[in-house]
Image 1 (cartoon, rainbow, N blue to C red):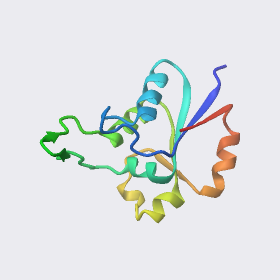
Image 2 (image 1 turned 90 degrees about the vertical axis):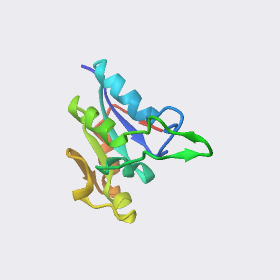
Image 3 (image 1 turned 180 degrees about the horizontal axis):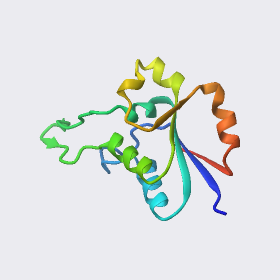
Length: 128
């Protein structure tokens, strides 16, 4: 049986300007597509990824304009569509003023106190 892997994303917006994707979310989509049994936990600033209707277009630095802005909520929807569970730490969302009705469909919120129990349900936990 394939090992169950939980990817923990805490370092938010890593490479989203250069690559137009969060590298770990992108990697998770690729690995899930290749048959790995993995789920994702968003903590800290990465909980912002779940907000629907984000519009990062319009980013410009001097004369340079971002032609392909990141679409992190859509990337997470794709991962959920492939059968992965996407969790977030509810305490981190609350502290940032995020409300459940703003989340994309399929997000499972857990309290920070529930992280150890969640980790215990996986064979491997990868923290980014």
